[in-house]
Image 1: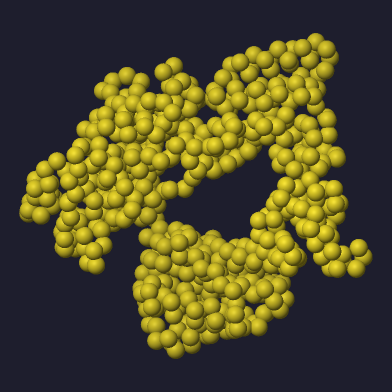
Image 2: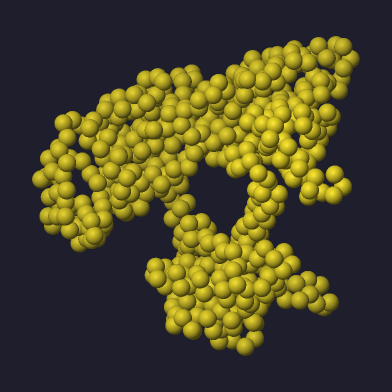
Amino acid sequence: MRGAGGAVLYVGKAKNVRQRLKQYFLPGRDSRLIIPYLVNKVETIETIVVTSEKEALLLENTLIKQHQPRYNALLKDDKTYAALRLTRHHPFPQLQIVRLRGRPKDQAQYFGPYTGGTTARRLFDLLNRLFPLRQCSDAEFARRTRPCILYDMKRCLAPCVGRCTTDDYQRHVERTVAFLQGRDKKILEEMHSEMMAAASALEFERAAQLRNRIEEVKSAWEGQCVEKYTMRDLDAFGLYRHGDDAVVCQLLFRGGKLIGSHAYSFHRTLEDNDELLSSLLLQYYQGRSDSFPHEIILLEPLSDAAVIAELLSAHSPHKIAVTSTKRGEKRALAEMAQANAAAEFHKAKEDKAAKDALLLELQQALALKQFPHRIECIDSSHLATHGAVAAIAAFTDGIKDSKHYRTYHIRTARGGDDYSSMKEVLLRRLRRAQAEEDLPDLLLIDGGKGHLQVAEQLVAALDIVSIDLIAIAKEEGRHDKGMTSEQLYLCEREEPLQLGRHSPLLHLLQTIRDEAHRAAITFQRRTRSKALISSELDAIPGIGPKKRAILLKQFGSVKKLKEATSEQFAAVQGINRRDIEALQAAFIASDPIL
């Protein structure tokens, strides 16, 4: 279904197109509130005839990903998932947190994926306490001559300087693998035997360390008892729906353990539950090529479950089953997923209601002209008189909205001139927002009354009347107060407004202001770092982007490059004799001491 300008509004499939379209266009056939919105926008309908249900599923999935239709269930959470990677090419393997992008092509061992980066980091931190494998890169491992601080913190065995034997290190590697595969009973038995042996040999400190590790292993999987059949990798999906909004929850079981969950929210979707789940499964699994489950469990059977299982199995190293059942343990897992979906749905509704109430209170307290759906905040950063940059952070309905973030290099204003810098950035931002009809509702400025006046004059010059302006600044510390407080400057108010220290409105504005400050500082540091590196290496003859990346990866910094010998340069693959001479000549010229 296409709208104005040929924009794709909805993609669907049907064995009987005539009957399917009656559902949307005949009065009374579908009572969903969203249907009139779609029907009023549809201008043309295209059909493509295919030879099988499998072809229809594949084509529907392809077109949804290609056109991103507004009224389809879109799996927008397309980020790569975190996993743990254990290198196998080195005598002393390293455990890393990585992001999976397709099927790994190296010979390393992967565990996961974990739906949240926080989950992966917590597990990584636990493993470093239990089985302290090295965390340094291969290049750093080869250069090190003394243990790093992680050795003193008991987070590394220091194999780089021979503080442990290969057998001792390999024992920790094997236990790491066993822990990640859910074979914790074997680990506990081995560690208990070592503890008793250490106690018999009067090595009480080592015995105490082993005892503490045993307790950590036990507590790590506490409450993770799953029936025997879940020793197979499986995913359970549950769906909760209210009107045109739906939430699907995915529970991931790997090696007999529940390792994570993820919720997918869909708004204003036309598909029924069967179609929504089918579309989700294809969008999520097809093309991933990593960590497929053996079984996908659903609460209700899918009409095209067999076709979906066949399509997914074609991309997996093993056969995948898509099943549902009315009783038993599998049913319990699917119901658990549905309960999580319902909880996520209601939590999201409650959070949105709370945010809306807070924004409404903000509108009333500050006498804003309109409801502040999108709030943008501007902040600048510079070093003395150079390297001036600025950033705009955006919050939509009280939630950080990264896609509306903007960063700017200050072009005309002198470094350190906050008024001129802010005026330049605001002019560039608002002109573009006018052209794109994408103006914010509220513009928050990190500054005082002077900053607000500059912004007010600029907005008036651009003939913009729909934006509210507020400036937020810290009041100078006073002896009678003992601390600083925040002041809000409004356009039509002479004296600044002060909200209570614990006011949720103040906390919201501070959060937005601090996020803009963080974005500006981060952009300024990134720009400065890039300039420092490029200024010393870009001008060296024969050292292009590829060789520069190789050198920095090998040595870590320009300082280490200056300290490197000809032999160390020669050991770097891709660096020839002419490059070595050019590097040394450039470093000598830039440092008179050399």
